[in-house]
Amino acid sequence: MKSTFLITMCDLSLAELKNFPPASTRILMIESQRKWQALPFHRKKLTLGISAMRHFRLELEQAGYPVDYRHEADFASGIQAHFREYQPERIFAFQPREWGMQQILTDLAGNLPLTLIPNPFYLLPREEFIRWAEPQKSLRMETFYRWMRQRENILMQNGKPLGGRWNFDKENRQPPPEWAYPDPPFVEPDEITRAVIEIIEAQPGLWGSAEDFRLPVTRAAAVDWMEHFFRWRLADFGPYEDAMRRGDYLLTHSLLSAFLNLGLLHPREVIERAIQAAQQFAVPLNSLEGFVRQILGWREYIHGMYWYRMPEYRQFNFFQHQRGLPGWYWNPEDCELACLRDSIEMVRKHGFTHHIHRLMVLSNFANLTGINPLRLSEWFWAAFMDAYEWVELPNVLGMATYADGGLLASKPYISSGSYINKMSNYCADCRYDVNKKQGKDACPFNYLYWAFLENHRDKLIGNPRMAVMYRVLDRKSDEEKAAIRRDSENFIASLPGEEAAYRFDYDAG
Image (cartoon, rainbow, N blue to C red; front, side, top):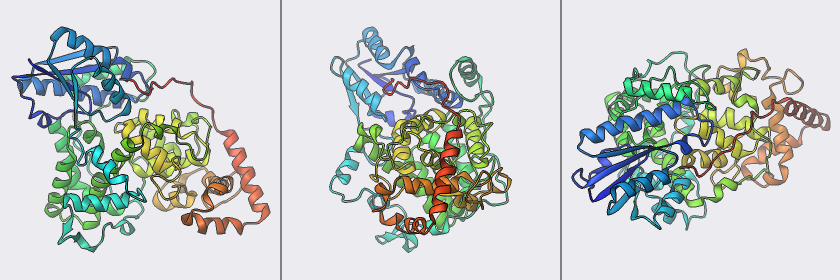
């Protein structure tokens, strides 16, 4: 074997190895203990990644590749041990998706014949995003999305957006439907997955359980999952994409992000198949466009923003929030806010809940209570099956908490309880009254929202998108403002403390 190709957990695609034939290429795969122990990860997250790697090893071997599959303390020592044993002329790897791995491989390239090649798992290479971004006066996703639609000729007709509009968000804000959707095609664990579950369940210091794990861990199963979403949920994705329903971690969402981020699916094939499925199943344009925007727009944009502003993105803290993450985020049983408790319980059970739970409940609450955005970011990274630093860091510190000061979003995504009441069925059964603004029975989101605006007036008063709410705040009486401050301070003081501190190994590999 003249060459070695390093395959990480995010590179699980046989198609992307077409230029590296089995006759001249040995595959190196490494399970790194340092990586798995970097955070108190969700057991389902680790089970998904490790089982998918082990299944991909079989796929590689069936395709004729010799595979050196190693269990090592870390990636660097595994690569060095492989080189000593096999002495390849070249070691190739895709550009890593995360900063820490990039630094590890860059350092190794100083002493080993290691070459990084462009990452094929995105439609837009990171270098092209940077070339797009540098002359821009504004880095808003909507501008990027329209550019990508034109660049890729997706949902375009005669040079104009299909349907005459770039997006249909105004049609996509319905409260949750009353009907249910068929379960996706869960997969009973085979011998490989059962072995991984046994290992992960025995590991101390992790979160959640993998005992009921039944997710796809192969490309074929991921394709089945995708097809099921297109058949049963895509048509309703648009109007209900922002809706939340108690106990429903998917609703009209797909979970395809988890399989895209492993490389089991490619964004281009998902978009192309969605467009085909829209014709096949009479999917309305607002649902099709809304789904395409998540992949062609948000996913590509977030990946580009991450590489455009790393490593400084980790340091952003516009509001200078310093509180630790309340223990509720790991153990929500005693949380009396129905929306927050249920959102966290779904994450603990499934390792997933969709983007409005993430944005308008989990992140909204953390921002309103002054939680350090990096602590929240670490929690997302640990807790969600589809979370990696490249995707969660700009989403949490940019979109969700405005910690980057407006680099990504045009305003903070914060709200009182009224938004949650409109978009969910939580408030009717909550211990707190969403219609009350003050006092011990009032929804905490109500007074926390106004207290946040007052506390950060100097940073936000000049934002034109916040002008209306500051005019409302300024019409409140001194007595109302005093009650808002009192209720907010009392509530925040009552929050449970952090769980036992953990040391996050940011650049683990």
